[in-house]
Image 1 (cartoon, rainbow over the protein chains, first blue to last red):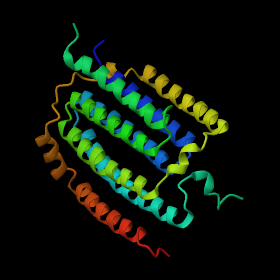
Image 2 (image 1 turned 90 degrees about the vertical axis):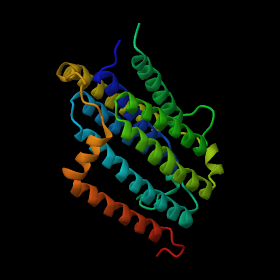
Image 3 (image 1 turned 180 degrees about the horizontal axis):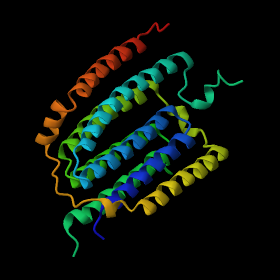
Image 4 (image 1 turned 30 degrees about the vertical axis):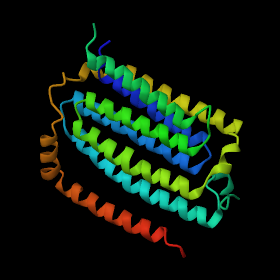
Length: 101
Length: 170
């Protein structure tokens, strides 16, 4: 079968689901963060394939911006994790229950 | 006899999903470094998919920014935190079941929508080439303001990171 838009969208949807599964099941902050990156990448793949199959470059520009913002987001998030680790000596969500009633 | 790009699509899609599974649920190792390495592989095979979609500039950016800068940052932080003791924690049954149920629901919705929408019927034959020149022209004319705003965002993120990683955080 010649891969069309649907094939790319299925790959993107499955990748997004994998990322979501990682965010829900894994309890390590860093691995959760990596799963978040997986979800962002799935959205990028969907946008690029829409851009390709609709003859419209705007999707690619949007992906360019998403990559830039994701880089900024990763740097800030990791700095937050490092600051948290300095205070609590853990990067595990089950040890961070201060806001639990 | 299918053409080479068609075969390559299936190869890259399989690699992407396989490495994605290994990022999230690696049966052999719970080590974050392993997850990070498989995330690099996922990103590289996604860049391969971008090349198949004729988005050459984005493929290059994907490898440079994601596989290069972002993953180095991840590995750096993993080594800084020294997370060895995290390995022996078990995944809880409750969160696993909850995760599988919700992800199954989302996946069902996605696939139902895909079947209902039939995006291939509306899609035109791809004639546009993802040329870097056209992309650059668009970026510096129509999207000039967002481009500048993003550069300010990067500056702000840099300042935030420096402030957050100072030793005496109040």
